[in-house]
Length: 499
Image (cartoon, rainbow, N blue to C red; front, side, top):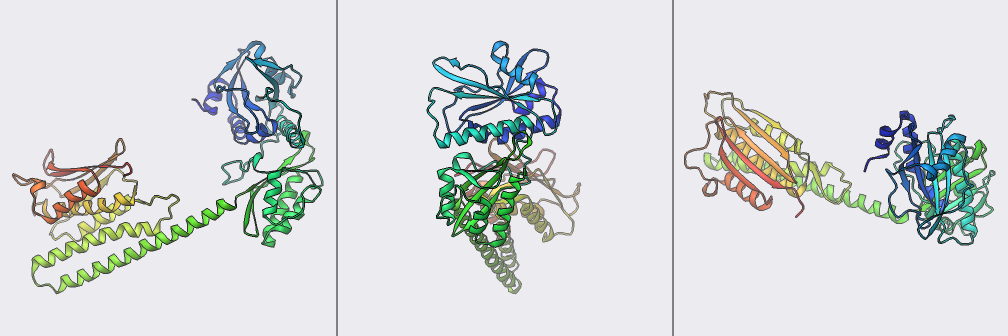
């Protein structure tokens, strides 16, 4: 399905700022839909055809929808869009039509012109279509909702709704059903929904909200006086016609998210709409996750320190061993332990927002490769480069994979090249992702594999580690073969799907 921007750009000549305004409206109009108990459809005229194209739709969460099928992308013309044409031509809200029938369901059509602030041109029309099959005598809640919806509809026509979005705000939460408070021009509460009243009770308010100054009550309830003053200022700002950023209120161990919107139909400030949502449990879980994340990172830090201590002890022991073969074995163990420590070091410095631990693997590979070249016992320099990106990998893959790469790189640097070869020694680590698999190749331009080489029957410890980790821990495959053009390449395929 094409996006709003795609549809508008393909079928209209609206300017980029007009399209951006329509985007902001579609991001904030759930409020109007819920208050109206109606579907909202955004229609744009198709040039020179007398038809309208639906580019966005939102259904109410407070009432049955008027459309079971998605209307986005539908082109309508003729008598069906006569009311849309009137709104576009006259630039006013249209409410005078009789109910229409969709099968056995009656519906009421209304239409609202869409303008940008300070502009007179109607850039789109919002259809407000209400399912009348469950119509009932409106109670106090419904009357307040509908009155507020009419005020916001007029603000859409004036170009003052939606308000500008503040940096960092990606959603329009809280919603109408979370809790609604309506204020008059003086800031007194004229209506508070049951959920709004409950949210303020969590903050410590025993009395009813209706008739009270919301700014004063909110400022008095907050634990922090400075935070309370800030909340008070935001309510006053909305009463003056501004749209302040959302605010979290904390009191008595409870947390309530507040959003204040000005009500200024026809440019006249008549009060404000304040939406509140009790997010106490959400914040409690956030704090638990932060504590667990910090604990896990501390554990990785300590594991890294312990591994580095083990590596240091092995290094000291290697210096005291007089047998060259034993000293070489200990030095290899030092490098293996150090490569695992690199993974834990990265995990200890990363703050993960998800339950799964993951690491940026490219930096780890580069450090392991640099160490392999640095400690190579040869009288020539090996050039080593990486082609492609590993990206972010789960820790359960990163740890065995870094050990495999460490062994392959070490093996290539130490054993692949003649002292005076025909080519400059080079080792390339290539990687790409394909169908939820990681394809890794470690290739060199050295002497190649010896005759009759078989990885499965090799008695070298390093290659045994490679084979065991690649096929066991990583659940993948690995093959060592002669490289086209000379040299050796190790080809490994690792599945990235969760175990």
